[in-house]
Image (cartoon, rainbow, N blue to C red; front, side, top):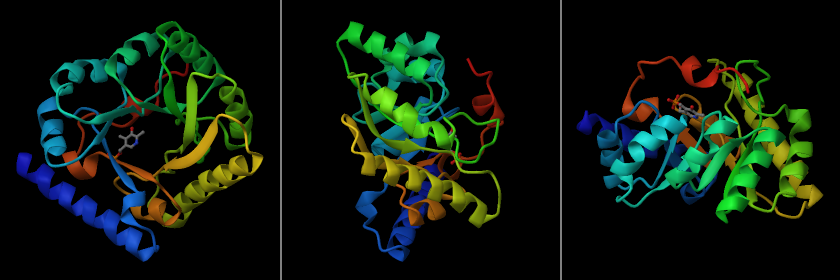
Amino acid sequence: MAESILENLAVILKRIENSCRQSNRNPNEVRLLLATKTVSADYIKIAIEAGQTLIAENKVQEAKEKYESLRLIPHESHFIGHLQTNKIKDLLKCDISCIQTLDRLDLAQKLHNRLLYENKTMEVLIQVNTSNEDSKFGTYPDQAIELIRQVAELETLKIKGLMTIGLFTAETEEVRKCFKLLKKIQQETISLNIPNVEMKELSMGMSGDLETAIEEGSTIVRVGTAIFGQRIYPDSYYWNENKD
Ligand SMILES: *Cc1c(COP(=O)(O)O)cnc(C)c1O
């Protein structure tokens, strides 16, 4: 297992480099994020010790469970799951530097209140449901800018960009539409010059579609399966929870 993680990592880094080269981008512009749901802390350690610096969990419970084992190895943690408001307090104990899945005002307000109380700030990405699938979280594209304006008023939250999960399909051009839409919302937001809003990050692309995402401007690709192998739980376990 340890060996295959290292081999898979090398393959992914090569894929990122190749697609950057093909789209005339500097590989330094694209950060690899390891999606570590269901992966044990020991295996995550292998990847971090091999030079990876950014990991992310989908569930607060899992983040908590692995936090102690990984705490002393330098790395950065984001959160990429659907965040229920009653888990905010626990998540803030896990030293998360960015919540990539901010998708509704109610969550933003509760997060803001807790951050105020703890005298902290938090980087966030606004998650957009670019594929219009009911099973996915994220604000709808036509409501994204309104949400960004509202979140920008909450001074503990630092908007750094947008995140999306592309459509699940083997048809590259359909997935590409999702990524193009995220880029378009980014450009529109930039042109509005909203105070307290940065739009430099586009978190898009996973094991199966990272090349397309990089071609469309991704700055963070989130990769799980292609590095750690197939998960025993279906993704619906992580993505189709009841919305709160
Ligand atoms: C699991 C997950 C990924 C990684 O998906 P793979 O197909 O395993 O690479 C990326 N983003 C999110 C939000 C995830 O939950």
